[in-house]
Image 1 (cartoon, one colour):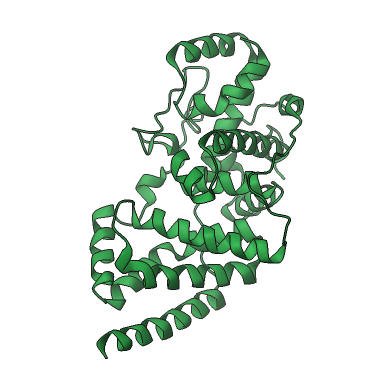
Image 2 (spheres, chains in turn purple, green):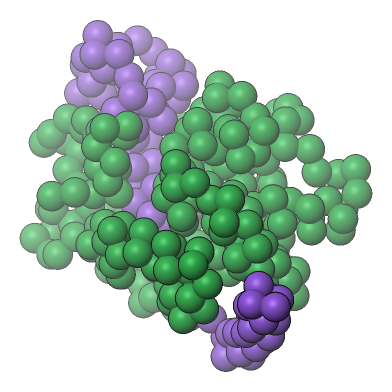
Length: 83
Length: 236
């Protein structure tokens, strides 16, 4: 397996969605190639960093706009259902 | 321990050979990032109860669902539209639509996945309105494959520990905003919102191979962009 082939398989490898024989071949290459190892390692970290990142709290104005619009709509909808 | 990769062990098991590629934080002996599964505020059972109550007209239950997911839906809308005002509209429209269509929600997927799909539709409509004729998710985008091997450097064991939360958010927002929409949206749904490849394909009306291809390139492009912040020795 060549370095260029590694790139095409990184996603499947990191997702565990790779054929076992191909995985073995890929890992054999990684064991020998530091550059590919770094690409795979930093790609894995990229996913983890985004994945572990909590969304920031909503700005107060955004939150209050959302909740007042929802409350107005929800109470109206409830009234209509009961009529 | 579950990691982001292992949260859905059936569809996304993570096989990484050791010792060469150890999990983030493992080498430093420091605590690794908390897996999302442990940060989720409540179990799915609780979500089902809230959804059932909301369907029966319990506004408080629906409010609880809104409070639970408003931050994530806002982040999703921001990442797709890249515009705060649009993101606010998208979030509001998504929750209103979800409430309106709640009686038709059959529970075949998680409520959150269903909500994400509604929000994505709203966000894409907004984006298309803002840039008519410019956004086509299935367009082919040429990528310089050779560039993926440039800037290959060690990031050290855990780049997350070198930045505070605010700095990290700024970096992540900046790099994701630089991605072309077809890559950005697929990455958002697949790796941030954790939809499966099939769910992502369905939500975006793309084929499964197209989702896989965009996801691969999105991951590689983001890796490349983050390299300048996270390479060992860089702190800003």
